[in-house]
Image (cartoon, rainbow over all chains, first blue to last red; front, top):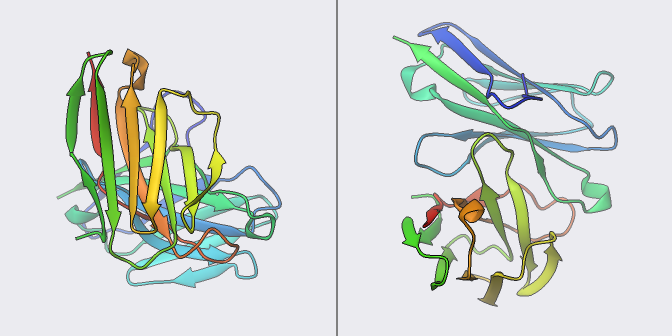
Length: 113
Length: 115
């Protein structure tokens, strides 16, 4: 999940298994959420987003789940591949209030071949 | 190809130098952003431009000076920086700063080291 300390949480997954990365967001008014993937030496890459009127959205091999009751967001990656190894972080925004994105610290996903 | 290009990719400078970071986006977006990414910290928003107008300055020290001559280009002018300014500086763009016009698309950043 998202770090509240100095260390980046790490998730190690066997190649081919499913990965679940969690994020606890802070603002109950947030109505828009994004997951980004950042590989070493590169900038954050958009993966998938979801608005608060939905609780699930699927992309290619990825699914985002939103639980507004407990302010929790998760990213599920199916059949994890070595190329999925990266830092993943969520971002939240209150679009109706025109507030900027607020980013979490991220989770490092390591895929074991 | 991310659609957002940042130059240089790496920059080493002394505390008394003056340098500029450049960002160019080829996505037809109208909002551009500067972020600072330090180790073990979340992305920190620095500046936002929407249709060439600066809409946010997130309490950034004056030794960082942004410039947005048009919707496709963004600069960050640096002078008299401190060692704690060493970080990855990321540029991003989005359709516009208005509500509903996310997400942001990022460049690969400039790795800045202050000696």
